[in-house]
Structures are given as structure tokens and as C-alpha cells.
Amino acid sequence: MNSADEPVFIGHPTDAALTDQILDPVWAPKSRAWMPAFVFTGLGSLGLFALVFWTFWTGIGLWGSSIPVAWAFAITSFVWWIGIGHAGTFISAILLLFEQRWRTSINRFAEAMTLFAVVQAGIYPLIHLGRPWFFYWLAPYPATMKVWPNFKSALPWDMAAVSTYLMVSVLFWYMGLVPDLATARDRAPSRLRRTLYGIFALGWRGSARHQRHYRMAYGLLAGLATPLVLSVHSIVSCDFAITILPGWHSTIFPPYFVAGAIFSGFCMVVTLMVPIRRLYGLQNVITLKHLDNVCKMILATGLIVGYSYFCEFYLAYYSGDIYEQGTMFHSLTQATNSWTFWYTIFTNVVLVQAFWFRSVRQSPIIAFILTLFINAGMWTERFSLIVLSQQRDFLTSSWHAYHPTFVDWGILFGTLCFFAFLFLVFLRCVPFIALTELKELNRKMAKEAT
Amino acid sequence: MRAGVAAEFETADALLHAVKGMREAGYDDLDAFTPYPIEGLDEALALRRSPLNWIVFPLGMSAAAAAFGLMWFCNAYSYPINVGGRPGFAIPAFVPITFETAVLASSLIAFVLLWALCRLPALTHPLFGVEGFDRASLDRFWLVVGTRDVKLLLEYTPKDLEKLGALRVTSFGDVSNGHISP
Image (cartoon, rainbow over all chains, first blue to last red; front, side, top):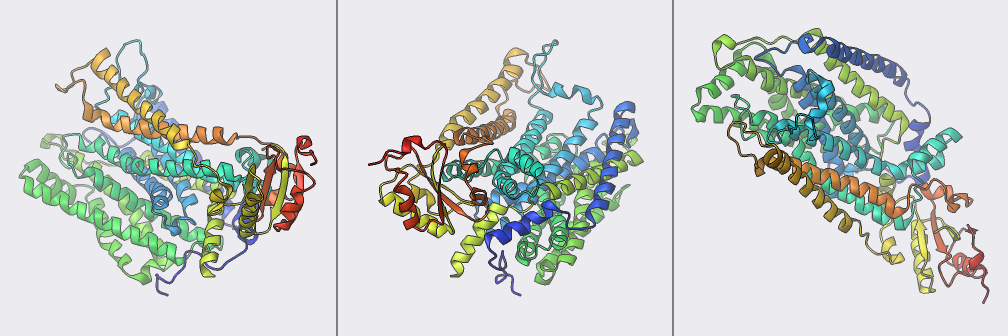
């Protein structure tokens, strides 16, 4: 079917039928795969906590990072997770302002994805501090030494950006959830559930007088989240760009990082959306049109990312700076661990071109598999950028080959489990499709059809 | 609206029609309860635009100014430290945190203000006792006439509502001051 003909919503169910379809997975498990996945990811999360505890107990010597490669797995994974978060805010805020209808079915779980990804991201800088119990030194509190944080450093910027992002994402997500929680309260099969949903629904009654404030506040938060999402990864990129290290010291970083973030985030949206759609039988709500549009976003942002790679190489060549050229033409392409760079080029420049074809964009299985490769590719991109640039210092005597330890791998795997664990809990606890907005869309589309 | 007369309607269009009819009949303390926003309902109820943004804006800007002032105080006034010869009062370097504070403060204020303007959280409400009101969050549309409405008469208002297509009409809360007969 032509993508232009594919609707964002199939059929015209009654409000009651639609509500039951969306709320059913909350009342009872719909998939036998849920419980084993819950147990597995729960154990993986416990493993994460154990490794973090061990790191606190012994010190970050347990990791492979050592001078000159001071930043390795932890910062790579931090940037990767923060980037994944960006698509959720992009879908919920930017597409709301552009009044895109295909946003409605996928915004709730994309926002949840953002939240849980930012939680994972937040773990890394904290455990990388070495003495994490002094994390509050970043805040300007009246200390006995009378010294203040240096606000010209990127570290306080980073803390402000990431904590703002987490809090605004939570508020935006919860505000959108309140009317749906009220529906869940009124439909709950047991007294306990009715009480719990009732508390979190805050007594929402759907009053028109409330809804005018609600719409204003929701629109305002979307307007605030839009520049926020662009600022967060720009500030993260400044962690690198304001240093003097060749390969990092570059003005292209903020837009390049933002495009990469939205690119990887949309890939994660597909990775999560395809199984959810199938397991929960949501083909009428999450249609091929959604998949098609998300894949187009992946293609567009992927092309920006590819162009940024090209710019980096061209600028290194044109600058005439031997250190810059050494980084781009030697450290990245032919030193230890360079396979990560070539894998990145393979997925983010070559593989992504498959999305030019409608048959690929509209095939859930193929899109799912491609995004798995690209998710990994976005991780290796950050790895090659961060680690490969540091392995080759200015002096040959300081050169060093980086090798991760099993603790590095374990923490990365642990955060993947913890992310999946939180997401599985989310799927069972709250309506993961924005029900109220979906019913509004259903009415609009039914009106247009007549 | 703690007390009044509530009427249930089957569709959003029936509700809109009833709102218009009631406004024409002279009722003015009306509120509608719907499972999702209905286009044109605010106009029909003659609700004013929410003032929320005009309250948030000055507060958010003040928070941003405070953040900027704090950074100036710390790095340029209270304890300036020379790091690589950079100026203590470095406006470009203060931009990121000023911006983030503006966003964070505005969002928090908007969130708190929303519930304050709605008088929520309020886990109990007389309307929740009305039979069938639980479907106001599912697929039914309710119109409520509050006791502040001088036209509210318990003998006549339900008839007006039924004439406009209400499925059922119930009074709720303490309606003793709506009992005045003509």
C-alpha cells in the first residue's frame, strides 16, 4: 500500500471498545513472554547494582580507563543513553507543536523510553566521579572553604542540563498521564487498583474548566521541552568541544550530536515499537504509517550524521593541523579498536540507506533488525569518538591501547537490563498508549470521514 | 462546583447542542465533563482563556535572572578564581545554566500552578457519587449546572436538560439553596 494512503488509525471503534483495548494489557498480562523477561532483566539489574557497589567499594581502577584514556565506557554509555532519550521528547514535544497526528499512538511509550534512558545516563557520570559521595560539590552551596563551583566549566552545565531534562521529562510524562489514570481509576477491576490509580489521578474529573488550564500547561511544557531537547545534547557535546583534544575540539559538535541523538533515539523507538505492536495486537493503533514516518526520521537524521562525519574529515584535512589530521586519518581509522569506527561507518552511513526503500520502511521485521545494528552503531560511534581520540596522545610516549574490563561490560549490560526492566514494569502499570488523545483523534477522524 | 444538577449525554455533539441550548435559556454557571477535549466546547461554555502562561512567564524569567546573578556572585564577586586568564564575569559561559534554569523553573511552576488553578488534588468530590458519572472518563458526556446559577430551579432545570436530550438528570451535593421555587 502506498504510504500516503496508509492511515494513522485503522477503523472507527467506539470509545468504550478503544478504552478496553488499551487498558486490557494493564489489567492482565497479555504475553507469556513478560514474566521471564521481567525476571531476567530484574536479575540483570541486581547485577548492575552489585557492580556499581563494587566500584564504589574498590574504586574505578576496576575499569579499563587509565591515562591517557580517562574517559571510556562510562562516558560513551552516558552519551549513548542521553541520546536515546531525545527521540521521546522529540515525538512528544516537537511533533505536538507541529500538530502531527502520527505522534498520538507512540508518544506515551516514547516518553517512558526517554525517562528510563535518562535514568541510565544519570548513573554513569555519578559512578565515574571516583568519590561519588561528593557529587553535591557541583552545586553552589556555602561551603566551609568558601570556594564556589566554576560555572565556566562544562561539568556544572552538564549537571544543570541532565537534571533539568530528567525533571521536565517526568513532569511532561506525568501530566499527559493524569487523564488516562482517571480512566484507569474508573475502569479498575479491584478496589486496591481503583484507590492507587485514584491517588495518582489526583481526582481528575475531565472538567472543561480544568481542561483549558491543562491544555495551556501541556502546550507550555511542550514549548519549553523543544529548545530543552536541543540544548541537552549540545551541552553534552560541549564536554568534548571545549577541550583542546584533537578530534574533540570542533564547532560542529553541538548540531552533530543533536542529530546523532535523535537518530539513535528513533532507532530505539522502532526497536521497542515493533515487538510491542505485535505482542499486544495494536496493529490498528500503531500502523505501518507510524513505522514509515519513524523510519523516514531515521533516514533524515542519519544523513545529517553521515554529513557530519564527512565535515569532520574535511575540516581536519583543510585545517593543516597535523594533530587534527593524525587523529582523523590515523587514530580513528587504523589504530587499536579502529574496528569500532569502521562498524560505525557501516551502520550509520551505509546500512541506513536501506530506508530509502518503502518496502524496508514498512516491513516491521527488517526495520527492527536494521535498528538493532544501528543502535550498536551509535554506541560504537561515541566509543570511537571518545576513546580512539584519547588513545593517541600528542607524544608517542603517551600512547596507550584501551581495553575494557568485564566490569565495564557488566555495567553496560546491567544498564540495558535495568532499562528493559523499568520499561516492562511501565507496560504493566499504566496505559502505554495515550488513551485520551487517541479517543480525541478517533472522534476527529470519524468526523472527517462523514 | 460542589453542588448542582448533572445531566448525562450520549455523544459529544449532543453535549455541544445542549450547552448551546442552556446558554440560550439563560443559564451561566455551567461546566462540562468529557472523557477527552471537545473542539468548540470552550467557546460554547464561554470560558475565558487560561491565564497560566502569563503567571509562569515572569516567574520563569525571574528564576533565570536569579541563576545568572548567582553565577555572577560566585565566580565574579564572592570568590573570583583566575583559571587560564579567563574573566570571572564570563557572560557566554553563563548562558547554558541560565537557559536550563529558565526551562526547569517554568516547567515546575507551570506544573504546580496547573493543579492550583484546578483546585486539585481533590480525591473526593460530590460528583463522583453521581450514578454513572464514572463513564465521564470513558464515553459519556456530562453537563452540570452549579448552584451559583440564579436560573437553577430543581423543578424546572431537569426538564430543560431532558428537553435538550439528556439521558438522565441527577442532583448532587448540597442543593438546598437551589430549592427556591418561583
